[in-house]
Length: 354
Image (cartoon, rainbow, N blue to C red):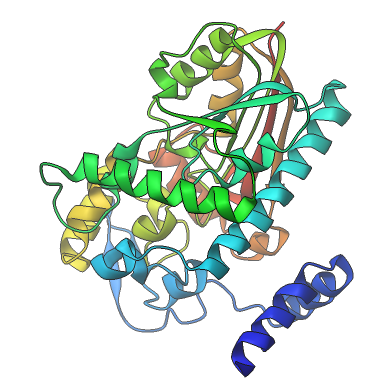
């Protein structure tokens, strides 16, 4: 009981901006450099003969919950009621931020007929559905969650995952306290969407763009789905950020997933992480694109959309860890990547259909 009260007090305090700023400043003063624990004598030698020192504690610092992705029991465990309430609060914050950005940059509100891409549990979709004069369609692909699961995919996994998502969304709806039927959930691939043309006033997504197979195809679909004058808002965790490998593909050296060419990355997993290699490789090949900021600009333009704003949110502390050598290694594997890509932990994008 005492632990629950303490956790509730911490969560409440961190939702107050003034308290959160104090905590963030204190953490910044005790920041651990990314390679603090690298003096282990362990190295990975890439195809160019470069010795990369390894820090086995790095993934714990960057992605502290990564082990849950590898454990079938943890991966299958439904979220608790507290976790669902936490997700609902974070979803409300995301929607509020998106509304503010879209309104300030386009003069439009997130109202009317809306499409959320990559909706997962529906937490954001249910918050959007609270808005007056708003209808929400929420799309996702159950296959994405099958890919990241531990073990080999089996016949029936896709249907089972769809059932899991349906049950999770109903629990999320009850937590959000919105009426049944407030959101229409559909299985749809935004890169080849079957939804109705010009049927939406806005298309939004949160932490999704880094996972679409073809960003150009996705933006082309969005352009087709948006009504004239419609807007899109997307924020995402880009591949080239220090945490862009997500839990499964974050290596034991900073920006390792981007510094190594694909063949070296696969050898790294085979040699150093054989127990999780198959699962991580599926995710690396099927669920992570290599979208740099320059590529994003080009995809939006080629899709016939107006780029209203592209906002990389950098982690300034990372500048102390980013060396010319790291930049050179990333650009050798991915020439379109820049320092801006490597320092941006999130990117927000606002587009408009002419």
